[in-house]
Length: 257
Image (cartoon, rainbow, N blue to C red; front, side, top):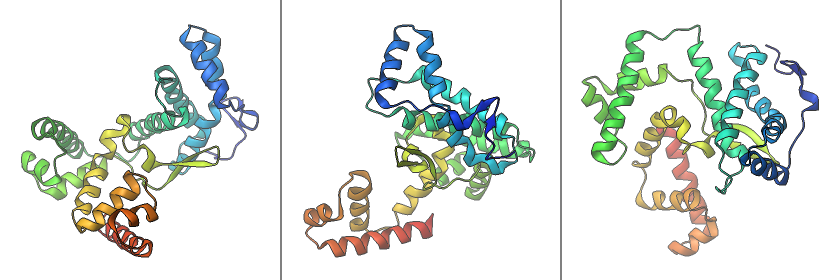
């Protein structure tokens, strides 16, 4: 396994190159013109990103060489599908794709097999969820999914938990130029939509337990990106009150989640 080994798959990780943003852009533009050598340089120049991501899976009992190879598949998919016109860093786009590839590998090769009935329940729940989204034009609740399946809410939760590994929304998965990327930063990525569905429902139901003012403050702080001082000015209370209400709301969220 050896999470800190220097050579992985014949690659000396201590000598992996790092591409700056300007060089990355030039290479993507060259790749768009059909220059294969640009694609090869992009792959080689982002292997350190793969290494950073797969190291967080080192405690799963898998060989790092295997995880690194799987991560490289995710990297290549990200390179081939990255759109320069979008105002997104490549690492922000690539990290969830690499994680998704590794997690699929771990799920499919998990020695602790989940029973077929549990898997069937989980996949039926995902199908029902998609059907209800189209029908209701919103995310269904766990109770609505359970009712459609004619099973208990607890059975749905247990089945969904059985097909995915637990992960914290606040777990750092990559440090990009000293700016850490957390799992929370990727929750809107469509590649991992199924895996995050259960978490999103849980958070939304926990939000319903908050007061209207607490919801407003969290929305302004974490979805609109406003400072506590800006929030205080907008809702006509002191910054200290905003801080106190925000802290209380987050503590209540943690309790329910």
